[in-house]
Amino acid sequence: MKIINVVGARPNFIKIAPIHRALNKIDSVESLIVHTGQHYDERMSDIFFNQLELPKPDFYLGIGGGSHTHQKANVMLAFEKICNSEKPDVVLVVGDVNATAACSITAIKMGIRTVHVEAGLRSGDRDMPEEINRIITDAICDDLFITEHSGLINLAKEGVPDSKVHFVGNVMIDSLVYFRKKASYDGILNTLGLKPKKYILMTMHRPSNVDNVDSLNKILQIIRNACAHNNVVFPVHPRTENNLKKFNLWDKLSTINGLHIMGPQGYLQFLNLMDNALMIITDSGGIQEETTYLQVPCITFRSSTERPITVELGTNVLISELDVKEVDLQVQSILNGEHKTGVIPPLWDGDAATRIAKILVKKYN
Ligand code: UD1
Ligand code: UDP
Image (cartoon, rainbow, N blue to C red; front, side):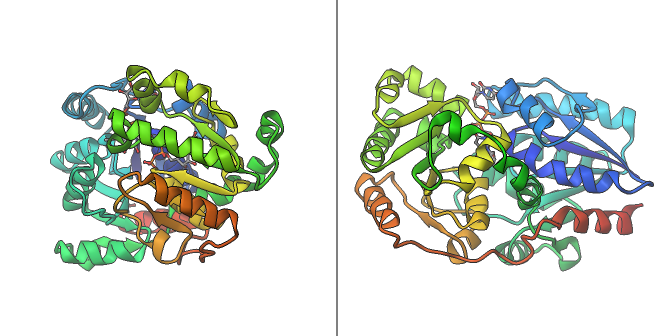
């Protein structure tokens, strides 16, 4: 069985690594990686291949950034050629980025079995570019691998037959479980002069939060307030850095006392930073799940989440509209030890990729 695994952006690398490892253990399976090149900087791409023990991609499409139409149309044209030459039995896509939707449409139209890992998640917010990618991908794929119970409900509501749906757990947590010990040997805390549980970690990259000046100003105020309580560590996503510079806010950010501002971090460094953080403030999808597993309090700047289990069972709290006062209250209550403790959701045990590989072999080998 020849499988093409598709990656495009940072969270995809973390999800594909355990799947590729599990597939590689099976003699009758050939597992290839296609990288669309949506994320291309060394620190947004190559570093993950090295740290996650992934081989170089078998095919690199080099599509880069640009509008959604530009990205998807170019990915589809380039991916069609690869499917024609490689004739895979299965195409596997993960998550909700542009590569996920573009490659699943291409493969399905070519009659190739196509499967979606991390299916069934819905925020209910169609203004999120990812929500459209999720809906398109789930509507057409042959098999849907889900991470949490809400996926079962969402897909049933959309009329997806049960036979297509497999509740297997969470491959992003597979990577966390696999690399947590190695990450703990990393020296980033010493380099930054930080002590465990004595700093707040922050990430921010959703267009709704970082593409307009009003939201960015609120984020700056939230950081100033947080720095009054504790050190804040902020690895800045390229979208966010570009916008802070565009709106002349970068210098204001850089001069905040107690703030460690830095570029995007490698997976091991970031995992170590998460594991030792007092709390995390974020708008990331994946980080809501990782903090739930690590049982680190998480404040998420979103009005909805496609990962409701992180609120129901985990440590996640949503705050919408970048409510500066509400965030400060939450930060203070976490500092006072009054926060959700949470439990680890079902099947988030490090073995999701092995379950996926078994199902694929049974159905398609
Ligand atoms: C993309 C995904 C988002 C995911 C995020 C993970 C979609 C619709 N969006 O958003 O779901 O949460 O990745 O981080 O697929 N840039 C660089 N270097 C890079 C990559 C990006 O400088 O290596 C800059 C470019 O200016 C680019 C901008 O960041 O235009 C945005 O990148 P893009 O991939 O379009 O969207 P993300 O915000 O990264
Ligand atoms: N991450 C990382 N370095 C960073 C920030 C995040 O390795 O500087 C990891 C994080 O641990 C998680 C993934 O990147 O595994 C989340 O990606 P991101 O927040 O970019 O995307 P999303 O999950 O929101 O789609």
